[in-house]
Image (cartoon, rainbow, N blue to C red; front, side):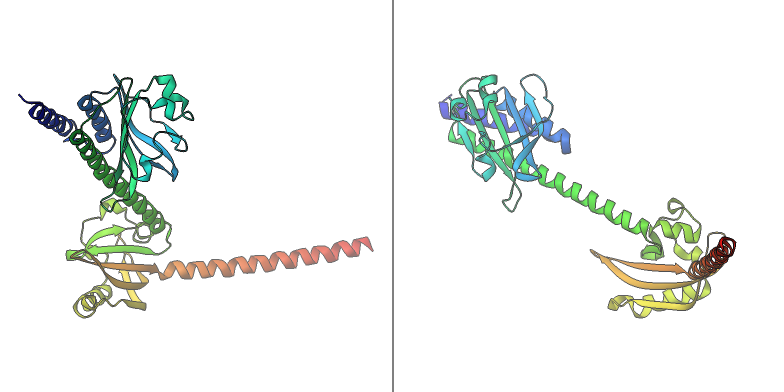
Amino acid sequence: MSDSSEQSQTIQNSLRFIYEGTATATGPAFFQALVRATAHAMNVKWAFVSEFAGSHERVRTLAYWAGSAFKNNVEYQLDGTVCERVLQGEMSYYPCDVAPRFPREPALQELGVESYLATPITTQAGDVLGHLAVFDVKPMMFSDRELEVFKIFGARAGAELERSQAIAALQQSETRLATILDSAQDAVITLKEGQRIELFNKAAERIFRSPAEQVIGKPFDRFLSHQLRQVLSCYVDNNSSQGQKVWAPEGITALRADGEEFPIEVTISPLSVGKERLLTLILRDVNEREHAKQEIRRLQDVNLMLKEDLSREHRFMQIIGN
């Protein structure tokens, strides 16, 4: 077999090794599988994958293979390190004598690092997210084709990191939204096709006296008075397709889970998520508002009484003093 054929077979074996090592993994498990498979495929001791840590001056490793086991992930400053250039978007390759080139990174000398190869990992738009790096105690001599294969490993890491970061951002957004909705004083209810309940916030649980887990996915019908049923039906027939919202400030009632009828104010508006059309109801218990007003008046009366009592006591003390 010619040298070219042997090299081609080696590259194919490397690609297959990486694919088989990472095919079923996602998230942290993927990055661990990737660095271990990359180290074995490239025949090197160390391999790690990183992402920026808060700024473009620092990175943290997501998985770190050290020859026979995974190391704990680390975070470090880029300035003066062998990794600095690659995080600016360029592949970095030092076949030998890498440690003397970076005197500000003594760990290279301490570990006996002789060679280093790293490629940036990027989004589909080309924004740098982090890097994939391998290094060894012996020189590393790679052909141009092998370096291109290494870039493929980096591209695969970039796709997974972009996906993982998008999922994390979505989860953070959902958490913030849930916090906002659950801190709202008004009931927020989202209905999907067939007026089945998609969202039922904490205020809705309180107002309708029903836990969300007992109503999610079920028809909203059980909470509809005759009036509210008519309002919803009329809205769906005449307004929802036009994207208009409707406010019904008075004269409307709803039903609690125990069947009690109570007065409400309600705003109904459409919401489109992809091709799915939803309805959102923001609903206020008028009784709660009236009770709040009565409590404010009661506290004002108590405050007035206390002021009068203090005033009388003050006059009494003046009389005694005189």
